[in-house]
Amino acid sequence: MRRALFVAAVLAAVLPGSALGAGLVQQRALQPQASVRALATGTFELVGLHWRGSGRVEYRTRSLAGRWSRWLLSSDEDALPDRGPELRAMRGWRVGEPQWTGASNAIQYRARGRVGRVRAFFVRSPRLPVGGKRPELAGAPAIITRADWHADEAIRRAAPYYADGIHLAIVHHTAGSNSYSKAQSASIVRAIELYHVQGNGWNDIGYNFLVDKYGQIFEGRYGGMTRAVIGAHAMGFNVGSVGVALIGNYSSATVTPAARTALVSLLAWRLDLAHVDPVSRVVRVSTGNPRYPAGTAVTLNAISGHRDTYPTSCPGTNLYAQLPAIRRAVAQTGLPKTSRRDCRPPRRGR
Picture (tube, rainbow, N blue to C red):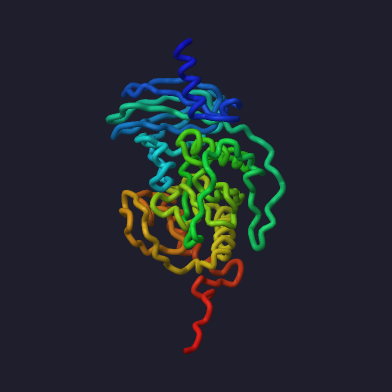
């Protein structure tokens, strides 16, 4: 009884407010050992692991129909906040990428290498009707707002922070499953929000926008789609960038035509708004990450892949290979392209 009360107190601190009451996130400690262990859980749709040590954790999940998934090896989340309060919230844990499993109720796992502690976050994200109202933003494609995908605004940990403007776009993939229906996409976005906030301790969902394989575009981090909201998606380069993630893993899967079209439309509108030439190159100064120490000036494409800024395979080999063509398509889409250089007032004659 005393242990149960202690666990409840810990969960109340980690999972404040409405989400705990609704039972949407469950944290469980796992025993790190090489032999396979099984754990029955309540129903969940997404799982993310945290662990300590140089090793990793292999795991698979069981669907409500009793089918086990393939074994997955935990991978560190590479969409990260800059050094500061959001990153400190992880407190030395290695943070795993969230994996969409669909409705599941058990996990099997085993440690690989040196693993000291493991904790799992099981996220329930029930399917809810997606609202039909779309923002009236000049030139913008149809975007499913936070209200429409039922973001939990009560769990946000801090007010948004803003940069001086948007200078480039960084393209990601979520690295989760590609097996999801169009009706599940909003649930996936909400599950990622819950994991980023209540599991990782971030202020909000890390990405500024998300795009599914059906071409649906979702508003990400709170603060205004037309404003330079600082996300938690590209450690060292979050300030002044807009992070767009395609839902799924594009290391081997092919980007669907619908997703590519939506990505081009979104980038064309957002970079037009910021007066950024999509085929230009920009110089940004890293605030610090394992690839570029703080203070390093880096020349990047105005539309870059995450691997250009961080030691990662994101956004996947197939999506990354399409970025040159995507830049050209963005340049041909949307409003007449006006860069910041074009917006400077003419010099007065002497």
